[in-house]
Image 1 (cartoon, helix red, strand yellow):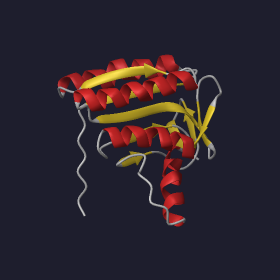
Image 2 (cartoon, helix red, strand yellow):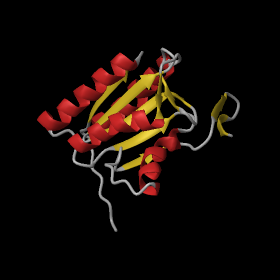
Image 3 (tube, helix red, strand yellow):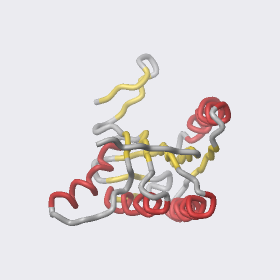
Image 4 (cartoon, helix red, strand yellow):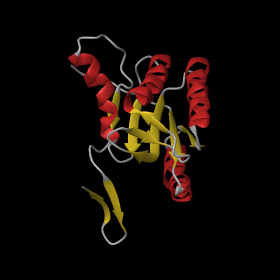
Length: 162
């Protein structure tokens, strides 16, 4: 079965105490590459749950009104339990997946997510849980990319996966 995925806007969502580095990455790489490819891009800084929930609502509205097909990249901390924000507030993977599901519905199952966070691959947990219990549930994304373990930054060797 072939799956097709299209996007016309990259959302670069950052919730990290080192957000300045992520902002530079967005400005120096993502924004420039999007301009070259005639794509929209937006940097969103998230400090707490309220900021995240506002961002989700705004993305949903853009999908509905402007026919935006989003690619969402997250720069935040994660664990096997869920995603943590700059404020140290946390979302379980199930709750985080619920918010992404709302966006995925708004863009007609065309959401792709990349997680630059430890255990970002655990976004698969809400999907697997529903499959295992035989419950039909909408998916948080059409596709996603994220590590299944811890990521450590070593300035001498770039990024190490543990």
